[in-house]
Length: 250
Ligand SMILES: [Zn+2]
Image (tube, rainbow, N blue to C red; front, side):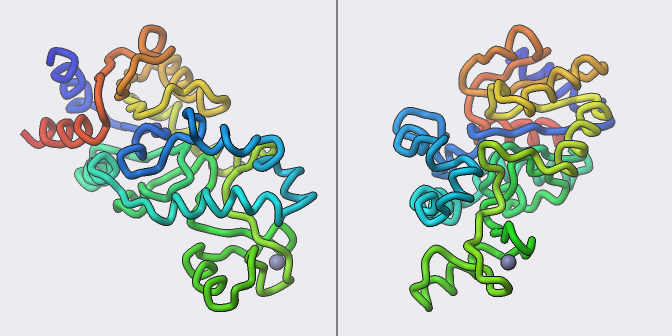
């Protein structure tokens, strides 16, 4: 309880708050952590199914994995944690969300300032002509025509979900935007991520180095807990984030 009050006190006086989110915030939305036991990367070797070279060499094969990934994303709905971050933004208490997730759930919960570090599985892209498509529209087209994997209507190449595959760079605007936010903030909320995967892992460290308070929200302790976080709130983001909203309103 002391930690919770401490977090409220920090957030109450903050001027620029940024949230960094990871797989943990979407677990209660039915999006499993791809790196967890039984997860996507245990059943599909990422080097064989999720590397950009594999996609370029044999997109039809890689779509076996991508179909499962986009199916999971499509079937998920935002939870109370996503809605709480959208509410903090609407209250003027959160400047942006930087997410490592590709499920698009922050946008669907109403968050406006979202930096998608690893792309968005609700969009498709053509690697040849750069056309972008809404995933649900493409899905309807696939269902109507039976043509799979989906192709670009402009140039007929096989589409790729607009997510960052292994071997691909973080989109430049997202990388720069996230870095700027990490430097500009005075509080960083790190939610549902152990922040061990580079380059997202550098963001809380950058925030702390430039004088920010770091508040961690996680079910478990992480490498960040002792080394980077000023306050660690232990538990589900589905419960803790709405409680923070209530605490800031009270
Ligand atoms: Zn195209």
